[in-house]
Amino acid sequence: HYKWRVYEPFRFYLSEDKNDVIEVPVGFVTDLATVPRIFWSLLPPDGEYAKAAIIHDYLYHYPLRNRKESDLIFLDGMKVLGVPKWKRIIMYLAVRIFGWKYYHSHTIQHN
Image 1 (tube, rainbow, N blue to C red):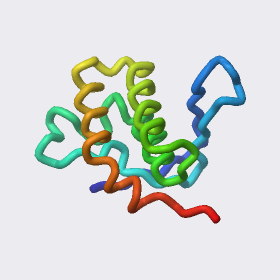
Image 2 (image 1 turned 90 degrees about the vertical axis):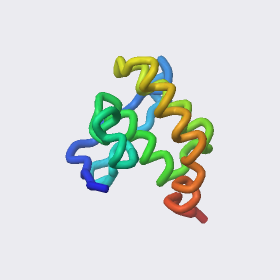
Image 3 (image 1 turned 180 degrees about the vertical axis):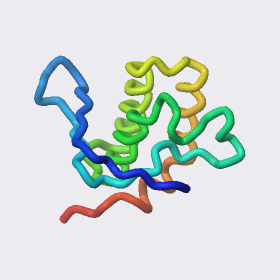
Image 4 (image 1 turned 180 degrees about the horizontal axis):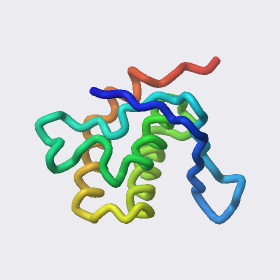
């Protein structure tokens, strides 16, 4: 998989409350959407859901929310970005079914 680096901080507001925000810092490295290469013609890693995928990767790496909440934030982010419903469903089901492996292997343990 290719890697991308965030070059300017970006925020995703979870509600009308301006304090309910996830901010991805400069320097965070992501592979955007972790999609097997065979499916890239339909679901490229840098598709219209890329910003939601960055937030999702960040939440998997730094567990600010549990896995289910992180996956729902990904789903909501895709909706906000105008991703077609069929793609949102496929991407959401993929992270629910396969995401546990990445969540547990990439999460930084905070003591």
